Length: 233
Image: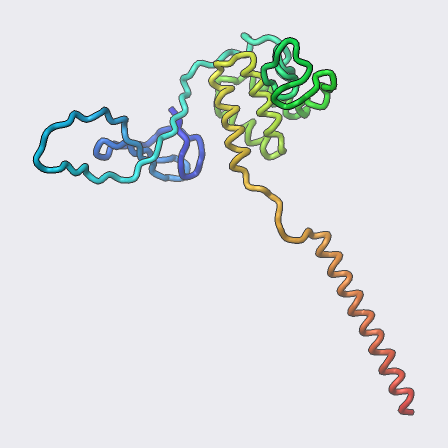
């Protein structure tokens, strides 16, 4: 069983845990953070009492986001068709369901007659990685590696599209559902790499302009000094 650590936001296996007063405490093997989660509490039966009952203090609890690794997944051999093409009845661009008589997609606005398949194909590297992933579809670590590599190349959006096409063919595929949700999580939590400061090219240009202005001022001062000395003699 795996869960998502609330501290480092990683998907990790449950290796070390303990029960503390009926509260499950799980230790993350990656960052050593402790996540505590209480079991669901059934409705208590009201008992007449002359004194108010004060519940015992408990440490702050958080929801333990458990990811099932034994959920059923559809084998790649059970799916037909090109893995890089939307199945019939779905938008070829965003993979949203469409009506048979529709001429455009209600979700993304694509006019189906204007769709160019070559503009929505994965890169050669991602295509090879996806084919390899289909051979190890039940291994979530393989999914995680592909997601990390695609994120480094800026191809998470295309990976999300591939997972949606998989779900269009197998709506109950657990691995595809987890992969699609992981793409959304990584996209929404990614830190932008752009900076608000000036670009290096702009900095070099400003530096050159300043040095040029200083040189012109120095030449002007030397000319004035030369004229003063010439007049003195």
